[in-house]
Length: 80
Image (tube, rainbow, N blue to C red; front, side, top):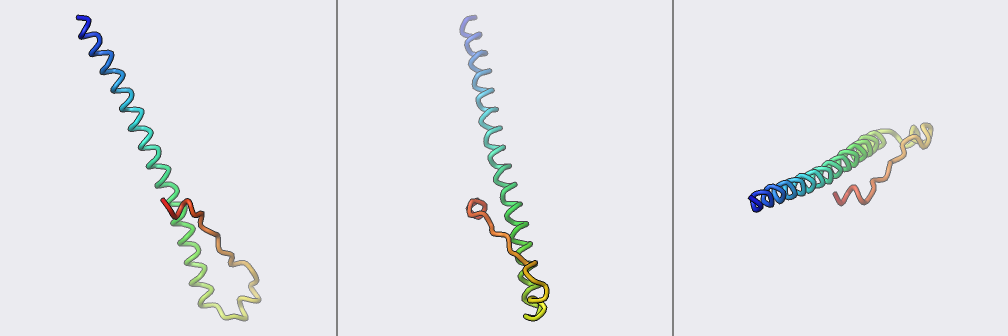
């Protein structure tokens, strides 16, 4: 009887601990995916701007001005 109570209590503790660890790992993975998504959109935007600048003549670039600024990618996002 006392051993059954101990087993039930231990089972609850282990189950909660496992749930906490699973939640932590899923949140960490979700954060990584979000960072990768942001980095991907920055890279895609920079490539689009580069392709546009490549096709625009030198004179038009001077007339347009500095509207085509590239956004740097955070080194942390690259390492994800």
